Structures are given as structure tokens and as C-alpha cells.
Image (cartoon, rainbow, N blue to C red):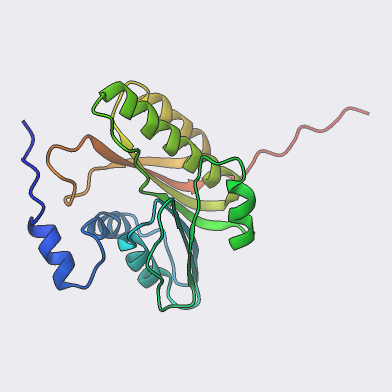
Length: 208
């Protein structure tokens, strides 16, 4: 049995005390402390960013010379820092990639996803929905991340978990699994961390 859900737990109270928008901020903070892949001036994409707890930590990590793009299917309360941009976007919509490019069309130093599906209570269904979101995040990390960039995605442990980890390994030099201390006891979630995106393979030369 996991620990019971306690909405006023230690991390909830700590987030309130520190002016953080969500207790989940401590999850990405722990990941960045363990694997400090973000430098000042970096550009990062935060998927599933509402209410903005991750964004607060990421903004501190990259500083005013960096750039943070946060998107979610619900509105995110605006940030005072001009280098933090947010938008209401559905990552599974057909026009998502085009709309994301309107926000920022350059490469990212990190793509971070805290996306989670609306849970149905049916474990296999929830795992499949979680995997679909994680794969979309991975697609963005591979297509929009610069060589050497990082990838972080929340995923519900399930039947195709190992397959997804292998997909991340194909694109990144090192893959870590993190279950941050702020994760609720009964939760099945884990964060897959891809470090140092591999440079795309050069196309084979065409024979004359």
C-alpha cells in the first residue's frame, strides 16, 4: 500500500512558504540538482506547464538571458519575467507544431514534460494515454532539441515502459530514471531523463 493522499503534506506547505505555484516544483528542482543540464542563457520548453511551478524553477535556472516556453491545455497565470512565455496549446492537436513554432522557432537546450492524462481509473488506459503524451514530448526533444540537449518526461510505469526507455536511449547518450522525493507515495509516475542528445546521423552518400 502506498502512502495516503494528503493534500496539505510537507511539500504542499513548503511550496506555499517559498511562493511556488505547485508542490511539483520540487520535482524538477531535484532533477536539476542531480543532473545540472541547464545553464544560464539556455532555452527550455515546458510541456504541461500549468500552474507554473516547473516554470518558476526553470526561469531561475536559465536567468534573464535565457528563454522559457510553457504550454498547457489550460491557461497559465502570466509571469512578470519577459523571458517566460506561456500559451494555451494542445500537444496532440494537428496544428500544435505550427503554433509552437510561432512562439519560438529555434532549437531548445531542454524539453521537459510534466504532462499527465486525465486518469480514468483503468490502469492500462491511463498508461497508454501517459505513453502517448511522453512520446509526443520525445518527438519534440528529438526534432527541436539541439545536439547535447536534455529531455525529461513524466510517465506512468506500465507495459510499454521499457520500450519507451529504449526509444529515449536511441536519441540520447545517457538515460536516467528518477522518482523525486516530492512524488506522492501511491503514485505510479517516474521521470525519464535523457542526457546529451545525440547528433543526427549524416545521410549516407549517394553513389554516383
